[in-house]
Image 1 (spheres, helix red, strand yellow):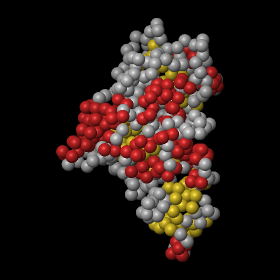
Image 2 (cartoon, rainbow, N blue to C red):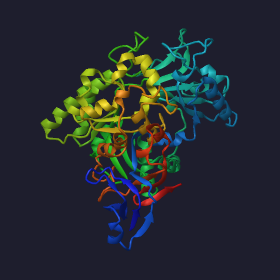
Image 3 (spheres, rainbow, N blue to C red):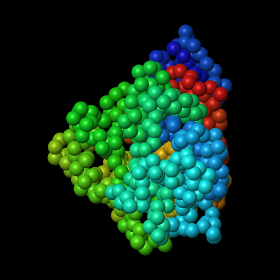
Image 4 (cartoon, one colour):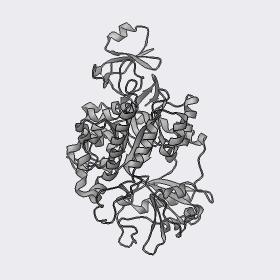
Length: 536
C-alpha cells in the first residue's frame, strides 16, 4: 500500500475535484483526501510529491497501435517539401539490402509547394509520382503511406511485385491514379492501397508485440495510460500475447473490423468483454475516405473540383444491416465518417438502429462516429439526440485547417466542431488517430483550447475560435469521455475510490499555464495500476 501526498491533485471527480493525497492498494485507489490519509494509513509507504500537479492518466480514444508501433521503424515522410521526403528515402535506400522493402509514412502533398515545372496529376494538387521514387530506388520496392492513411505512393518495383499494371481496373471504393495518358502515377487511393499491402512482407505476431512493448514508454512519457485500438486481428493477437506475459501496461479497448463481424457474431462476443487491461470495444466500419486525398463523401463538390464529391463506401441501409447484426449479440458500432454526407448516412443508420434496439428490447449501446469532421447543419444535434459518441481528434482541426478552408470553404463553420457537439449535449471522446498525428495528448489538448498550431498560426484568435474548449473540457475528452466510450466510466478516467490507480505527474501544471504553453507539457512520472512505469 502507498500514499502519494503533498500533491496538487486534479481528480476529475465532481464530488471532490481537488485533493492533496491519494491512497493506493493492489492497483486501485482506496481513498482520496488530505493529510488525514497519512494518519489513517500510518503504515503505508509514503511518497512526497513536493507540490507537483497530478492528473488522471490520459487515454487516446482513437489510435492504430500496431501501425504506430511498427511505424516508429519507418521513414518519417512528414516533410515541408517533396525534395526533403525524397532525400530521406534515398538515405534509407543506400543502407538497404538488395530487394528489401523501403517503407515510410506521413507525406502530405497538400503541404508541399507546387513546383511550376512538375506535371500535375489527378484533379488538383502536387501529387508525387512513381518516377520520383524510381530515380532514387530503381530496384528496391518503395511504399510510402500518406499522413491521412487514405493514400499510398509506390515506385515501379513495388507495383510490379503487387501485380499492378495499367490494365488493372480500379477496385471497388478505390482508385489507381492515372495521368492524362492513362499511365499509372504510383498513387493509390483508399481500397486500392490493399493491392500493395497484400504484397508487403507481413510482420509476425512476435514482431508486432515487440514493437508495441517498445512503444509503451513513449506513450507513457506523453501522459497516456490507455488507448482505443483500431488495428486488426494481428494487433489483437499481439495485445493478447503481451497481456498473457504481463507486459501490457496500457489499458486497451480493442475494436473489431466489420469484415470479422460474422465471426464475432458466431462466437457471441460482446462489447465490454475482457478485463481492466484488454476489453472488446465496437465493430469498426468505414463510411468514406479522408480530406487529404479528397475522398471524404460530401453532399456538394469540393471547392475547385466540380466533379468530385468523394467516395461513399456504403449507404445508411447497409450500415444499419451491419449494426442490427452486431446489436443482436451486444456489439456496438463505431464508424469512420469524415464528410457531411458520410456523417449523415451514419446518423440515418443509427436512427434506425435505435428503433431496432427498442423494438427488440436490446440495450442502447454506445455507438460512435469516428472523426465527425464536417456536418450538414441539419445533423448538428443528432449525435446528442441519438446518444452517439462523437469520437474526435482535436489536433486534426489545426493540422487540416488550410486544406479544409481550400476544399470545404464556408462548410468549415461546422468542421471539427468540438464546442458545437459539447453544447448540443453529445458525449465526446478525444484521440489522435496516430500515426496520422502524433499521439501526444497535450498537443491535442492545446489544439482544442487554442485552435492554433504549435507555431502560433493562424494567429492569437485561432481557427474558428468559436469552437475552442476550456482546458477542463479538453482534458475530460481524454479522460472521462474516453472512459465513457469504453464502458469503463466506473473504473477509469478519474481519481476516486474504486478506480484503477492510473495517473500522471505532468512536468508543469497545465491549469496555471498560458494556454499556448500547454503543448509543451509531458508526463514526468506515469503510474499504471499503482506502479510507476515511467519516471523522468
